[in-house]
Image 1 (spheres, rainbow, N blue to C red):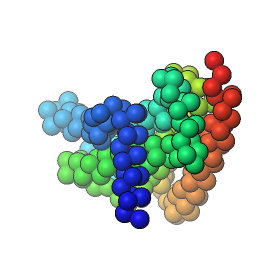
Image 2: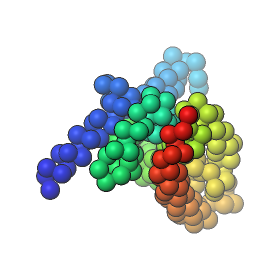
Image 3: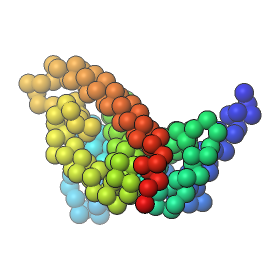
Image 4: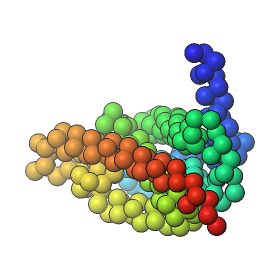
Length: 231
């Protein structure tokens, strides 16, 4: 049991290196750039914005989702662009084990990054609720698998990135709607506050199903070896 865990942790480590190089752990600190800049601008007087708890969701989810999107594009399409995809098909048990290890690695990186984001935000900007914490992580995982799926579908990181950015922009523009990954129940109008819990549950369940569905469809697509390896 312990040996299996060690082997899987080693596989996750190599997965991180494949996606982002030897110092892949630096990714954990990248989302911090956004709240640090916001706090800096307030500190030097360039911004007079005063945040409230409803703003915490976007402060965390926006930079986290951008980093997640970049990671997702590398999960499968990175193998295609570097011409190493065929090696993944030789892994005992199926190539899906490689993708699952990469997804697990990305999740750990995003989770650690969000912990830092929340700590910084609570110390310097505004308090963060449990709902905002989970909502931001779910949005990041959605764009992670969306980037993975679209880049695998188009067999290109660049084309996949362009398609994912479209969904990212649509999610931002419709952030007040329940079908948006950036939906924030704390930002609802006073007339909708009574339905906030119901809307939040519906949104969370919908995106859990959506994330699983995209992941499974992507794996089915990648299992078509002849199609994925064609020039």
